[in-house]
Length: 395
Image (cartoon, one colour):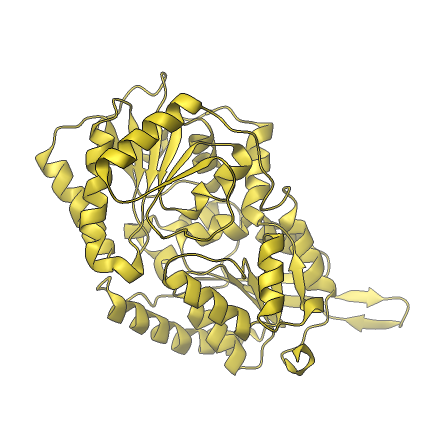
């Protein structure tokens, strides 16, 4: 409880309920979670849901708890299938489960992160229950179902913590009240800033995280692959991943490959990877499910190139100056730096782009997504901004 001396009355801390639904969402919000936890005027309620609870997708909850966060509630809502129908049903289950969680926790504000399809459940539930909703990383443009989800969440949200100036302009053009839209930068850049202060790869990824494949010598350099299915092209996901696998085969460099997200088409992506492992003797590729956020950023910071279609390629890698080969349309339209080379799903084009980026080496750091203090800015805003759920002021 906080004493407001000017009014001589006691006011309760604001209860901030943050819902984390997937492995990448945690790195996108970690520093904001820490800042909320440490803020004298805020009480953190942390809800972990969906694939963030599943071992198959890296069991992110273990990393979250290891980092010292107390989980307030867990929501198991992922339906097997990895197709558009299972995505819709997973979201529906999330709405039902989160309505009970929010009723019991009675938060003053709910925070939802980015654009994962299951975050729609957080936005819908909060809105229907008249709980003010804060959205982190709205207003961006991409070539995936994330595009629709992100903009839909923007219209359901009451506070907007965007990561770039162009995103702020876009959210305001969508009709949101300008005084509720803040360019905070991206909390994941806060982690990237920490990496620049201690850039050494000071752990053995094979020893610490295990994974599948031969343990190769990384001393002369390595590349990292992170490729997810594109939900609007989910039936092509196996074909897409095979092009990348065959491109990597042309590159005589150790490769550390991360498991895809739980999206429609993930079964095609993982099936392609498993088939390749069974039928090829390429000992240069080692597969991982997950890593702690700082370890992962150290890994890519010390790599020769990042390949795939993860937003890490156009966000954290931009700040770190990592050469990136971005494949396909998943990140189409998103703000990026000069470190990104875009190619289509063609093994020769991918291989040639990787060779070119390796030859180029590191790029200058670009602050498109902020300068590394987003977490604290978000926490301070959550403590001070007027909380409303009535949008009439926007029009």
